Image (cartoon, rainbow, N blue to C red; front, top):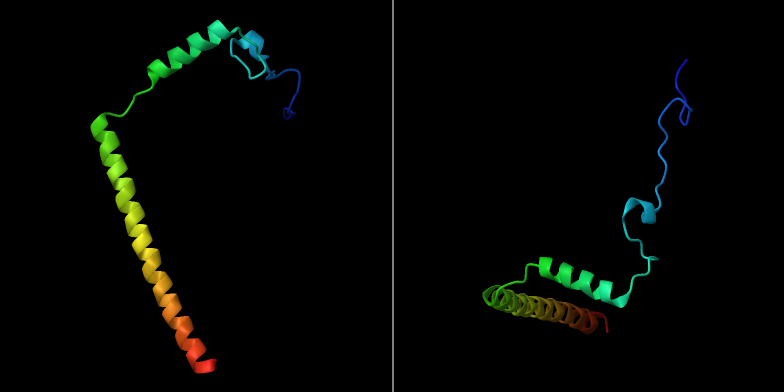
Length: 91
């Protein structure tokens, strides 16, 4: 006979509550001192960008924003030219 799902002979997966599994859930309350210690531990794991990386990224953002502005300005002028031409012909 084929085994059915959830049959007693098979190992069943049970959910283990977060408190028993060692994980913290969003509802778990900790005191402020533990919270600050955990925040400091997580911040120490962050790899912060160097000044050079930050400068290059900032410059690239300004360059891309300028390119996008020029592109949309040109598209706007093309649409304006087309609509003005249509309104002159049919208006």
